[in-house]
Amino acid sequence: MRLGDEVLFYHSKEGNCIMGKMKVTEETHQDKTTADPSWVSAAFEPVMSFETPISLSIIKNTKGLENLGLIKQPRLAVMPLSNIEFEILTNISNY
Image (cartoon, rainbow, N blue to C red; front, side, top):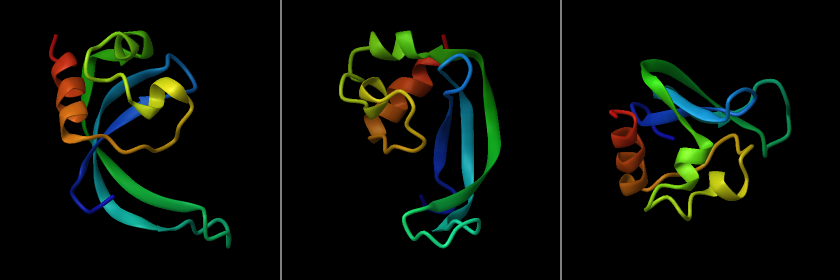
């Protein structure tokens, strides 16, 4: 993740849905809570909340999102999206 990148916030503990967009304010770095180099962290600020969150069931049934890691592993903390996937998801939020 790079400074200024837009990301989607997925709530995996309750609701299993994308709640809105955020922006990276601090790039990926070693997590300060552990010395384990495989643990990284980043900082974000909210950009907008979606009026209607995008549920996992909608994601699973939307053409173009079939290969999303979230469908195969719904508890992912972080995953990359292609520009097309990001556009599809943000367009869904406008309905």
